[in-house]
Length: 107
Figure 1 (cartoon, rainbow, N blue to C red):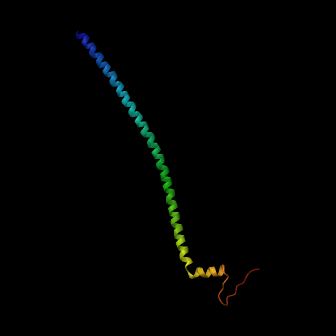
Figure 2: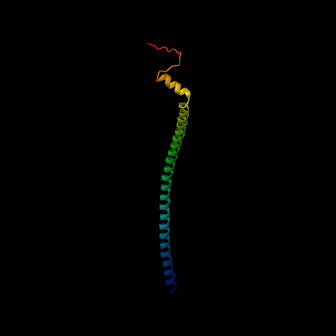
Figure 3: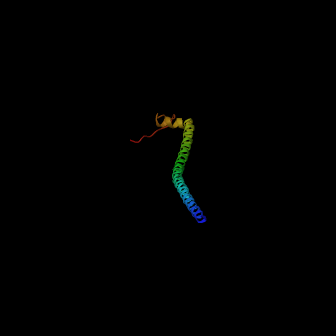
């Protein structure tokens, strides 16, 4: 009888070990799948990050260009308000001259 009990115990422990091994394999498989999914997602996020950095650099460049353009417009606005500009326009577009000034035109 004692021998029979030992066999039953060894069978039970053998079954438990098989169940334990299966559950461990399932857990390892799930962890492996999660690792793969996280790795793939991290690669796509890195690619997006690189494209966003390039876009940010382009936008910074455009901002600097627009600031320079705004500065040029401000300078032009100041120049337009001067007497020098008024005189230049009067001479070039209207053909006006000072008294006693002689203009030579090429034929």
